[in-house]
Image (cartoon, rainbow over all chains, first blue to last red; front, side, top):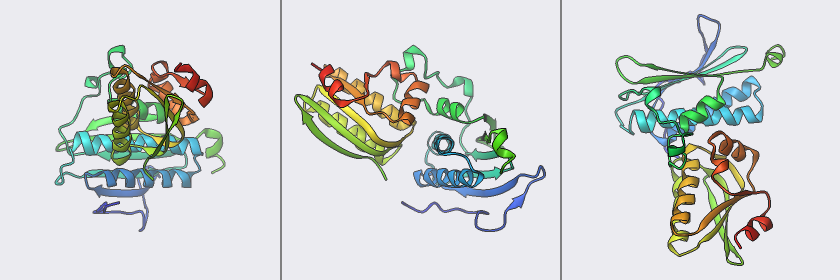
Length: 165
Length: 114
């Protein structure tokens, strides 16, 4: 595996607490590469493991982060070496929040073809957002300034588990 | 670990045993090349055993669809056997469970090509 080239990273240093009490575990600028996709997935699964999510949820979180990173690297930044992926992980007692931002031209969710429509069912691509939305509790996209798209993924622990954590 | 693929013949059915991960990049390319090569060589009965596939992303799902249509366009059929729960769930979410012929056991799957 090649280098991920993190330009900033807080995982191995001090963790910072945000205004709402969440703890920021990761705050990195990543290269637009498939190695960064693997790295982000590993970091997210590591954080989710520490929060006590079960195996199936870890798998879902991993896929959702992977698909979001692929969107940022491939469709957003188009593998452009000058463009970075902004990657953050935060946790609170109940929520795992992952933010992934690209520096691309942006996209409109409603312009993405429905992969479940009969005419699209045999297409080779276009299912990433469907999986992200199926696997996470919350998925938001917003424009980044000055350019690009930021997606926010949130996974919540079941209430019964958060009281034990 | 990327995908590992091996092939064997059961009668006139080519069984493709895939293990590991089918994801964007090396895994998806290896998988695609394998199926295209089989189709180009005239294999019309392809059974894809996914029992040892631990992980598949949307690119991997796309390669399953690509393989399905590639073999079908050659007049053949690509069917699936041994799906893990995770792969089953992915095919349900993407509605591809209704597209693929899916079998629980290999013997039944092989007989279905007759």
